[in-house]
Image (cartoon, rainbow, N blue to C red; front, side, top):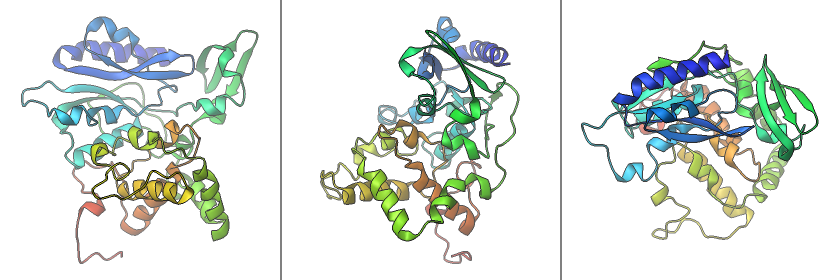
Amino acid sequence: MLETDRNQLHKCVEEALPELDMMIGWTRCDPLQTTPVFIRDAKSISSLTLGPFCSQNLAGYLVKPPALDAPPKPDAKPIGICVKGCDSRSLVALIQEKFITRQRVRIFGIPCGGTVDWRKVARHVELGSVKSADVQDRVLVIEDSTTTHRIALEEVLSRKCLGCRHPNPVISDVLIGAEVSPRSTGMETSYRDVDELDAKPLEERLAFWQSELDRCIRCYACRNACPLCVCQDRCIVETREPRWLTQHVGVPEKFLFHFIHAMHLAGRCTGCGECERVCPMDIPVTLIKEKLNKIMEEMLGYSAGLDPEAVPPLLTFNPGETEI
């Protein structure tokens, strides 16, 4: 089925490419990972791939510098982009906040059964010895120099995927492949990790975050990968007028950065997990945003990135708000 979907993607992109400025998608870079690819000519279309190794959220490439430095011309062709369910929610959020227009993008929706976390794969096999990897009937099949490893896909899926409620694109022009069933239909399962942490005493929660954030090296990969962090040239961690943060590397400074980052995403985070995926220290930073997402749902009945016409709650002012 994956090969059929890949062929469908190639055919659809080939038909649309003359009308596009470029096509943004994924291509395999090693057996377990993909990398973004930017296609402008038909001979490169065959490099496009899809499937459980396509972890990156490509939406950020539409709005990060230098894209913001050069606004598109009125007669510019649209940009084609491949999106999974959570990626499509990021597109919706960018449309809501008018960073892009709906007419500016041609959306190729990819129903997603979950993406592979290479860190979890490393618990089963030596990554340097992997020769090939594929998924067959929800089983990850890995060939190394001596052995064939068969690992249940559920054991190596990214944490964000285990409680996913929106595996199918919420917005698209072309849908590639068949829709898949959500893993979760309610808050009880989608916020399981948040609830488990919340159930611990305050002292244990504090100790958890002190231990986790102590490993942070303030590389800002989490900020750079986030498609909704679009003000990097004016980020509070680097501005000196006014000066919000020092360059000290103590836990208090790390706490302040991560919680300011999370608060800037309150009511905007779509749960794509990019911040957690790119963290070199394997810190579950998405948990902070998930907690805020849960508060938004409980208090305001709002989930980010589902309706292009909606206005995120913290971008509005309603003195008659009844839920606060």
